[in-house]
Length: 156
Image (cartoon, rainbow, N blue to C red):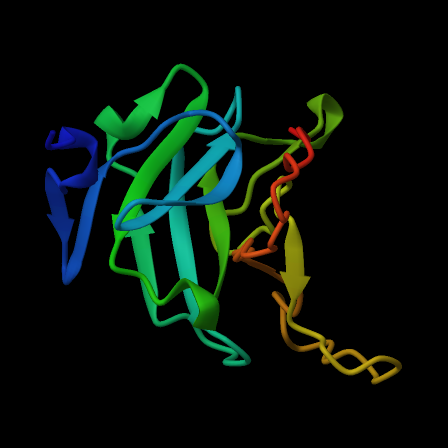
């Protein structure tokens, strides 16, 4: 049987996209691509920022279309990503009101708060590059562990 959720419905530049699943949050490998999902009750817009591994500058910035927002969750599937060789983050726009805890700045990429793997400074003990506003980046975890007949852990 053909699954319709494995086919893109939108394109942005060379990227094929479709609305994603809101859960689980973070980046999850799905058939044909990666589902990105992040929650914000206050953000007015969100962009996915993609980096080649170990590169300082992003190679792509993909805005989440308005119709890809489900309640307070921005979610989309990006198809045909080389997910083992990329790092990512999010840029969110919204109010800047520190008294209420809102410090949105669309120019600054944010780490995925649900990331299972963090990269960007891979050599222990090296001095940070203080000029790099985004040295720590989220990575997509390729979970190919062989459970040998046992069930994987049910962690959220």
